[in-house]
Length: 126
Image 1: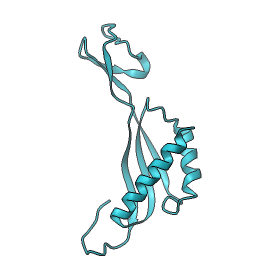
Image 2 (image 1 turned 180 degrees about the horizontal axis):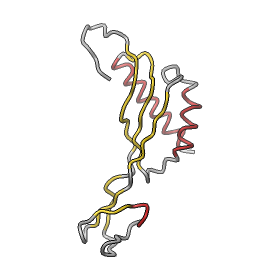
Image 3 (image 1 turned 90 degrees about the vertical axis):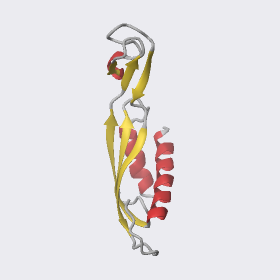
Image 4 (image 1 turned 135 degrees about the vertical axis):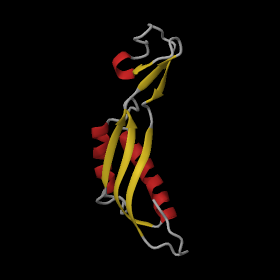
């Protein structure tokens, strides 16, 4: 289950962001996850729940997942189409000269957090 490894990497990234922005507690984290990223969202949620209980910053936080649809572009006819429905063969012209435009990414979209006052006096936005 590689979802646990991704959650651990995500937690490390969130820990770094927390230090940089004086975050004391996370309320929620919203991830945009590509439809063909290979992440099984149910397993990812389970891994988040398990790991968040072991990380004080993540304890009690909510993970929100938004799916980014997979879209493929055809170099032959210059059209896009739904990747999952049609695969690598363009449904418009039958070409195999295609490439994935979006749908395999995993992006931190939003973090809801509580912050401590910045000791330097500058306002921080997370």
